[in-house]
Length: 254
Image (cartoon, rainbow, N blue to C red; front, side):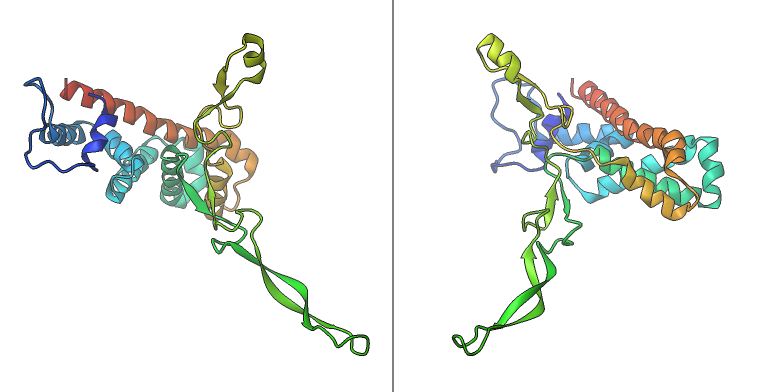
């Protein structure tokens, strides 16, 4: 049983009076077995289970646990160059990298962030000439005055949030027009904008700006050469631990 199948037990769509669902085989896995398997996996692969359950939005506690596991791994494996550059603020820098790395790992097409131009309001304030009096025919001309007016934000189109979903609609697939025309039937390919992910990845410059607030001497060249590879290794660590938890869950429910 894959770990993805266990998520439906956290939000069942139907109510069952008994604790044993209808099945034609006697070895059917019910909700009690799944919860027990999750508990065993949390004991054997705590990092991976917390990372995946937090990514799936089961609870904020799982997200916090995953960040703590990732922070412990970052402190243990931080390169000597990073330790030297961070000096006395190594712990704070590792905490920032762990949080941003987990957010990048847990990112999906359903995520949305606050619009930076309107700060989530959906409108922006601009100065404009506003007519305060329409005038009276040819004798009295209309009067205008500069006032602060609200306009719909052009960045988020008034929504106040920016979706992480790619232009492919979150599927990660787009129509290959050249091959479709050649073969005479619809052919799909991975989206060139998101590389088949279905959403826009969080740029590493966001983490760079957060770390530079703690280490003012850090420049972009040093970040790309020394810090960014370590930051990306933290993201890969989450994927590795999730795969280990999935393998453990399949073994337990076999």
